[in-house]
Image 1 (tube, rainbow, N blue to C red):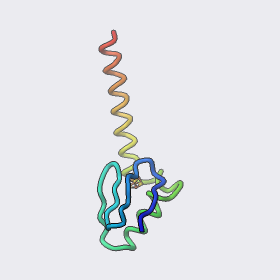
Image 2: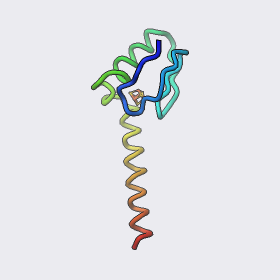
Image 3: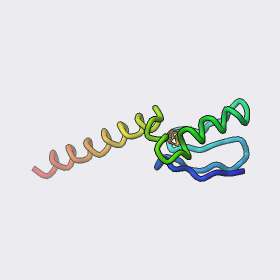
Image 4: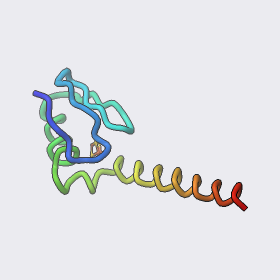
Amino acid sequence: MPIAGACPYFVKDKGDGYVYCECARFRFPDKKARRDIIYTYCAHPDGYKECVIKKVMDQYYERKYNGEQTAQHKYAG
Ligand code: SF4
């Protein structure tokens, strides 16, 4: 059964064995592994904050937006 994610990087769970995150597409070895990850991180209201992939994505967007600001300042002045 598809679930809704709490994490801002969660994209979709089509219920076909794959879970789509903005960073990756996951295919779990069995239903228990899927439940353990999804309900501990992706769909947990606080748990997603502890996900290492979420932390990597936060850093990615921080680099991206800081880089854009730096580039804007460079070309503005
Ligand atoms: S909790 Fe982690 S794995 Fe799940 S959607 Fe967020 S970043 Fe992706």
